[in-house]
Amino acid sequence: MISLELMRAELAAAGDSTKAEQQQRYMKSPMPYHGLAAPELRALLRPHLKNFSPPDRAGWERLVRTWWDDATHREEWYVAIALARHRSARDWQDVDTLELYRHLVVRGAWWDVVDEIAQHLVGVCLLADRARVTGVMRAWAVEDDPWLRRTAVICQLAHGAEVDRELLCFAIEHNLDDPSFWLRKAIGWALRQHARVDPVWVRTYVVGLGDRLSGLSRREATKHL
Image (cartoon, rainbow, N blue to C red; front, side, top):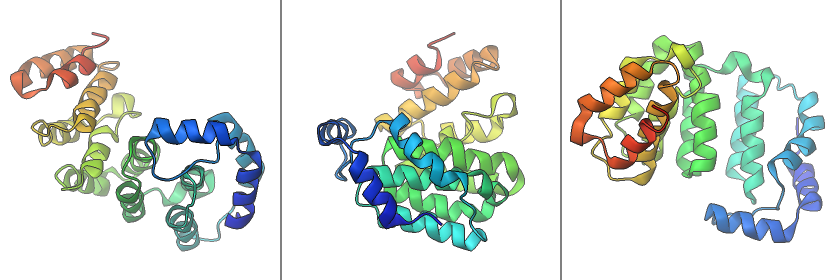
């Protein structure tokens, strides 16, 4: 297992206080940074992840949750996501893991971590276990928590031609009236991404939504049409 205390020491030693202040200010994060750029963090993590092999699902989930809940700096959240995405956990990306990801989304509640979780964790679960995960995404699409709703909207960004349009439309149409920038941006992003696969369908869908679709969502959706 990867030692939280050892990794904290390595993160602190490799950090840059000036960059940390800039990152925290840019991300509007109440949690401080150590000040590592993404390539630096990946390089630091690489030798630890090389031999990462959790004994079972329960142990892996506990580790991810501990890294998340006990984090003192935002890079520790990024480490938690890397542990969740690790190849050794591939067989556990299914409906039974969604409670863990729900916890991360609700506790994280900001775009940098939510978008990673939505695309690379929840989206993977959906592809692997579509019959059961689809129902959960429909439930998240109408949750009170806006970050769960954003997750439901953008969880298919990496699905290409395998996008479930019925689920996409459900998530979008149940959030059209929300004035949140993050949801309006998500709706436009999801449609813009699907336009790479089927621009005709997206153009028709946008026209059909009419004034229900916000200007921001419309601009995002049609950016490359």
